Length: 210
Image (cartoon, rainbow, N blue to C red; front, side, top):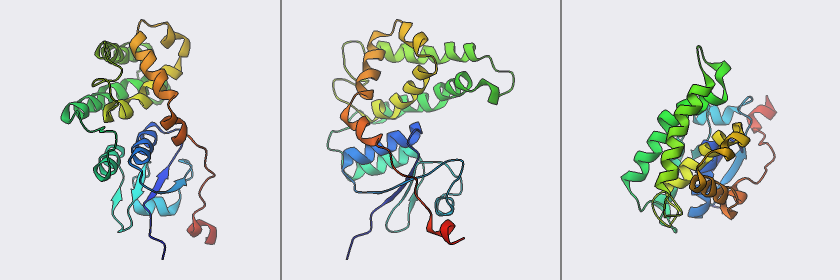
């Protein structure tokens, strides 16, 4: 009898899903990957997690984990071969700043038309202050908490990638040599290449019947 695997609902380009996929991959957990379109969410995913965002993991016992950091904690709690959790609460404090104020600025820099009375360049400047701080944090070390990759690096760099890609010429012109090298190294890593594999869209059998 085949043992049931955790199911992952994901969208390739979502930074939250990226970091969850990286934690699942490094932990060696065998999952059933279900690639979805966020504009056409499958009923099975919405049944598992009505909030309708990715990533979502459905465990074999039916338990649902539908926040990316919770998925990372769960996966690394099963197996953390590279010791990503070593920095402890300090890593999650830095992630909270990225997910909170920095993400607020990123959204308004990248999508100013979605918000009222937003100055995109003001939010670029505000977001830049966090990135400049990361550049300083990387002084003398390859990763945010030393020489080894931690959960903070993996959780934060997909959002730094979004910020950089919105205006790559501007980002590359900034005096952030350590941050730029750190981001480039993560984007070129075998782990990132692995989790950015393209999947066919998953077809929900419920929708097929309907």
